[in-house]
Amino acid sequence: MVENSNLSILRARIDEIDNKIIELLETRLEMSVKIAHNKDKNSIYCPKREEEIINRLNHKLLKYLDKATLIKIYQEIFSRSKDLQEDALKNKK
Image (cartoon, rainbow, N blue to C red; front, side, top):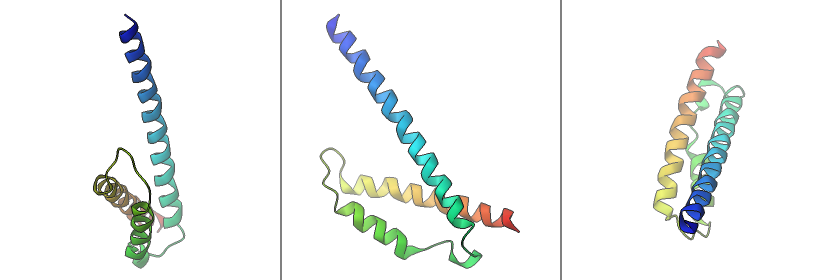
């Protein structure tokens, strides 16, 4: 029974972490929309900025997450950010 109790505690902790990750992703995407309001239509995609972020991430010391996976995650975040920025600019008119 102790093992099941411990497992439940660990799973509850993972649930808490997942909720925090979602909150942080939502906040990050909200910042992307705010940035869009300060851009013009031609400057949505900024490969240099994405490159800076990837370079910064590549210097992180990771124990359980390999860098290729981390980059894939961020590429998805970048993609969603660009979509939201494009939508924000369309609605800005």
